[in-house]
Length: 100
Image 1 (tube, rainbow, N blue to C red):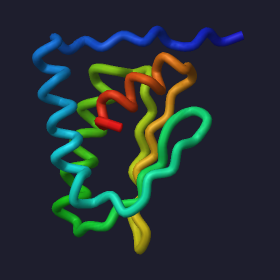
Image 2 (image 1 turned 90 degrees about the vertical axis):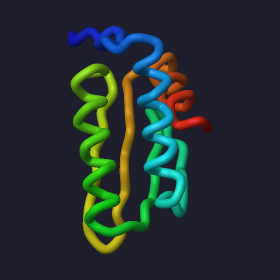
Image 3 (image 1 turned 135 degrees about the vertical axis):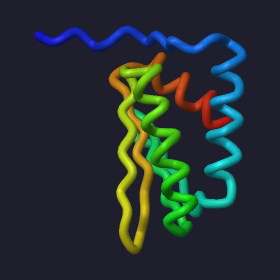
């Protein structure tokens, strides 16, 4: 049986705060709908390639420091960012990061 990854972030407190600000600044003008799911959040986005590339870069950076968090950006006519985890603690951290 696989054990869930521990909820550990390799960033310093200051870096985490800056990353959260970066996420909120990048997502604020793009989110058209936010849906809470049992294991995380789905955010419907509206934006062009430049804005979505910024979200993609943030998702890649997040994966490097917080491998317990799964981020998937779906592009196309209805872009969506899915952020999920396997624990309630992880979901609470995602909520805090996004300022929800």
